[in-house]
Length: 372
Image (cartoon, rainbow, N blue to C red; front, top):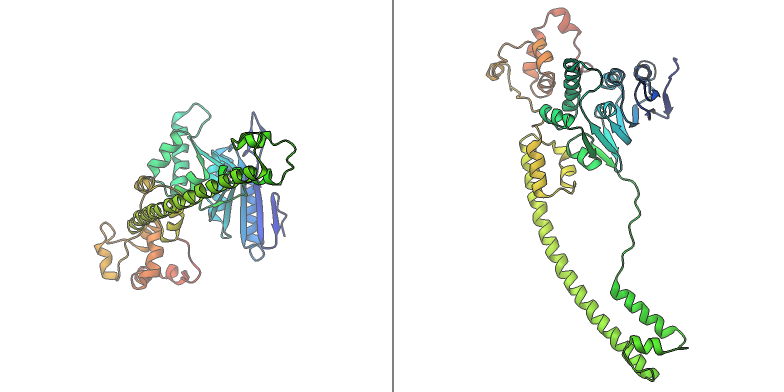
């Protein structure tokens, strides 16, 4: 079995670390070799397919060479073993392009992402060609339209994990442990002060009587009575706070319920419009976005791919411009539609297969051939 250069295998999972810049940069020296990574992924598929069930590419990189990066992109997209990507810190420039190509895309909650136009050299025509190519990679692996991708790239856009998940750049945010700041309560603190006063030795009562606004000659009974009065006042205030808090919580729950219902309506409509996948709607509902923010976000999303499926061979002609499409036409122009046809309209699909030359139709096996 051939040796892997940049890959570790633990149990049934292979891990590749992309923790440096990509390629050889004049000002940064030697980084990750894209050809090595592509070679490892290819060898995992050819020689380790029975052993390895998943490949994880973990990313913390400022980007680098487009040529070497595209080698990695190609290897990921052509891998028959699922390749998942993890943004462990930074995924900038070409590293971001690689990150969106994962079968499942994860991002740490503290991580950052950046996308921009191709740079380097002085041939604008070539740079525009490369930028358009990278924009297509983003468009085909996110929820964004091609124009949206180009716009974000042109502005050099930096994003947090929350912003990335809303645009479909990643599928899941990995939460890290955070230490929450301690909460204070002035009423409880004052109550504690008085309790300490009651238990401390009365070596000098002047400070106590001053605090309670009593004369320095006040008796112990008078001090206790004053403290009890203040504690009663504190309790009264606490009861008032509790009542107001309950009222506030009720009002807040009502507002939140209304907002949840409005959000659900926005997301439900987006699912109906094909802009959001049914499996992903909970991510949007739990994103923390307001109703207006969700509306604005949904407005920018492109409809998810929903091919028009004829129910029988005769109705294929009803799809404008596809009346005479052959199996090869569907494979070239609408492979996803062909895949859906195979699942939802076996009669039409079999008709396309039977129309192929005999040697091709005989070689097609629907049980194993899943690529279109």
